[in-house]
Image (cartoon, rainbow, N blue to C red):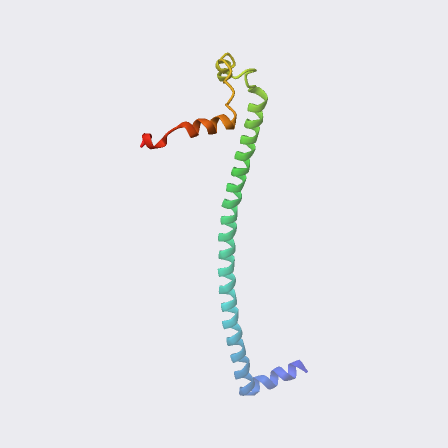
Amino acid sequence: MGLQFQQLGLQNPQVMDHQVQFYQQYSAHQAEYQSRLTVVDERLDRMEAQMGVTGALIEQERDRGRRLMEYSEHLLQTCHPPEEPHWTTQWDHSPPRPPSPPPEVVDDLMDQIDFTKLE
């Protein structure tokens, strides 16, 4: 039956025109689809390249952070603070500060000051 249809199609110009038109549209759609695929492939390639660069930068930062952590742990283990900081020794031998007067004494002293003479 397919053979008879082909034979009829070859003899009928309307069917041939329809087939040619369909093939032309199909070819145009196929070319457009292929160009879109090419654009998408190029975009994907660029994105993969960017992700590769970004991934490399992320990995560099991770390595840097890892090295900094290792270094700080090394410093914590190897560097011990002195038993007594040098700046406390000079204060340790100074005389103690006298105690502050009670608030009532301070108030009495403030009342005795004549602030008008200070102006």
